[in-house]
Length: 486
Image (cartoon, rainbow, N blue to C red; front, side, top):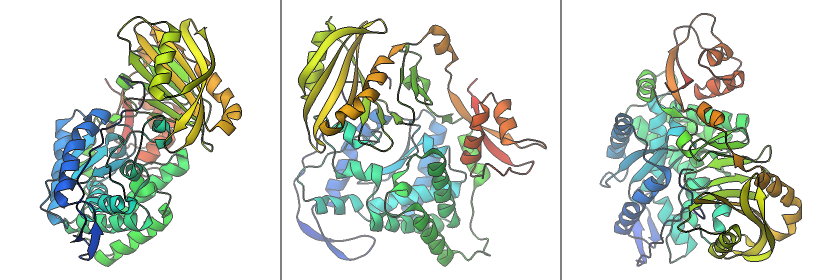
């Protein structure tokens, strides 16, 4: 969250002339009705790619970028649409995610790379995303949707409802976050196994990585990578099917496939782990930004997503949302004047409100109501806060019938907005993955302590290394640890 605006970034709609025709699906080889040509797919990817990079950021490690792209190109050669101009990029996001755009554009977050433990697992992830492209899942969804507009919301916005205040999200954004549905995701799983094993990678590593992600979900309660965490099918079912598919390719006793664990670990040594302080960090339920010198505390247990353009949080079980965005003001405004501009930008009607101060900052807090594209009527509590030449918009919203119940959450969050002290700001440092060789007597807890981490991070260490927290690797094993960047 370095340069936040009034709302989450929205990428422009690309209006495309539709070609209603039947085409042979490159994977199934069956004739199917589609509303988009291959040239249109390619154009969509080309138009959207720079906007995706602008939203997430390009991870500034050219050696790692080259490594991921090189591996992706090996898979592209053996896929069902090898003539596309594939591009594979690492985006600078701590989210555990990977996604693809039509036309050959594949993205993997640095957050996902931290949990991968071999080159074969990475090949399975990239192969899965290539599978969505080769099987034309986005095009098929597009046709099914029977729409004449094609737009895409930046994939870092985990909760589409947040962006629906006067904005829009379509099926591609939903697919990037939630997956393409049961059959398409299972097909992408099979294709990921097919493509990775065709380049000599162990097909069982696909199911092993699914197991890692399943463990993360169980440990944190958070859903992540759409390709493996879709609501349907369940992850356990996909793990089972992936093992069955791998068995068709490689019997358990065969040793003709590679995993590439040591090579992979050497490539991610120094990888940024967790939030980048330049975008602010989240510690438990508190957001801190050392450069902006602000902090904000969300309700306990809420799911928080710190994206580049918006800080967003969601109640774990109800449709209550809170988001914070930032605007650099081009002229001096009062809090009331700023609040009026905010309401206009969201197309919300003011019910009541007044100017006040929040922990020393001039602000206007009010209740608003309006209609959104997909949630319908919403009611919101909005604080428009002035901090020198910047304006912060803190918005809590829900459906009108739930607003009274949700309002205490919104009010407590708004009232927690305050200045971050210089001492607190200095303590915020980036963390990175470091490769460590296990010694006799080590434990997850002792390693956490050795590298300056809290004892509670021992479980995270086990998760990023695909180990049960109750078990520990043998001495001499190279593992990933989390350390403060020097």
